[in-house]
Amino acid sequence: MNTNIQAQKNTTVRVAKKIFLSLAFLISIQYTFAQDSTKTNQLSTLLNAYYNVKNALVGSDATAAAAKSGELISAIGGIDMKALSAADHTAFMGTLDKLKKDAETIATSGKIETQRTALSSLSNTIFTLAKTARLSAEPVYQQYCPMKKMYWLSNETAIKNPYYGKAMLTCGKVTETL
Image 1 (spheres, rainbow, N blue to C red):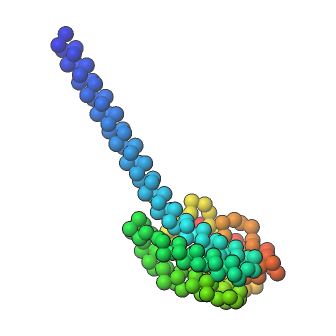
Image 2 (cartoon, rainbow, N blue to C red):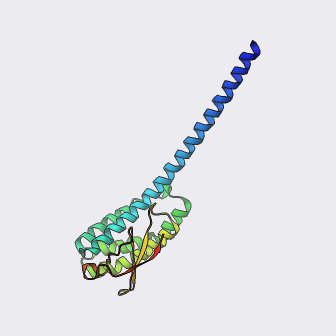
Image 3 (cartoon, rainbow, N blue to C red):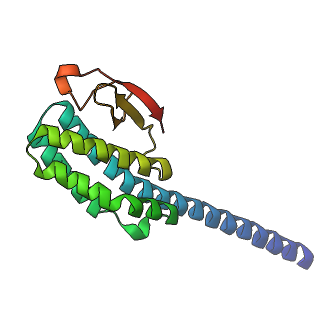
């Protein structure tokens, strides 16, 4: 009888260990996903702020573009460098000065042509960042205006040209998808 009780205790201990290890494994997976989500969310905020600037220029609204660019500047400043992976941190730091400069140009200029020229540079910089750091779980489409010979990014395949707005809204093509 003592042997049966001891065997039951040993079985209970083995089951408890398996349960504990399984729970520890699940918690570590959840923690990893939470960290990845925080990293992606930070960089997604940056990309979404860029899309808002681009969309204001699609609507040929210099005032809205300036305001949305101010939000982009806040998003850039709000990135928690410590929460980024080493690779994302390096990629972001390599683009930081250019991102700020272009966003500030758009934010401070009341002239839509100046804003659109700065958008071209900003788009190229964001695209460089998007190629090395994951900015979104969704596809990012690089689009091209053959008339201006300039690129922009979009979260959809439909062409909405920020360089001509309503004058040539659908002029362009998708050149790459990330």
